[in-house]
Image (tube, rainbow, N blue to C red; front, top):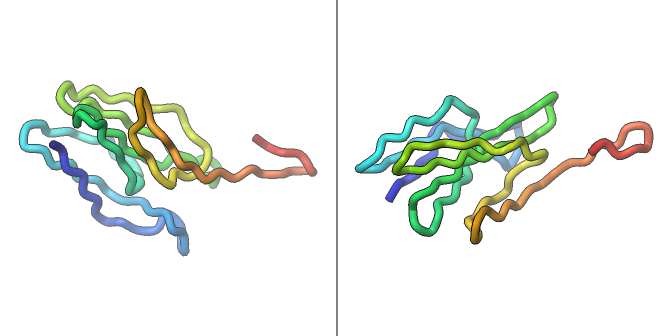
Length: 115
């Protein structure tokens, strides 16, 4: 079973309850190299322990967003999701996918929604 540890955890912005950090993956059988990203301190492992989902920040024009990196632990395959607008509060495994708890912000310009 893989262990996920967070180090160098700090606020993504001053006063924010959300963090950025480095991730250390510990597994006796597999060495997993992660891309250099601004990781969030959230993850989920599939019930069978074969897949690991990690969250990394994807901030565009000062607007928060994130992506999910899905790792097949044994095969070392990785895939990256599309960008989600907002902030991931939590991620949990569901049947055939994930449940995401997201805080999102909708901007209004000239009395019109910008979605």
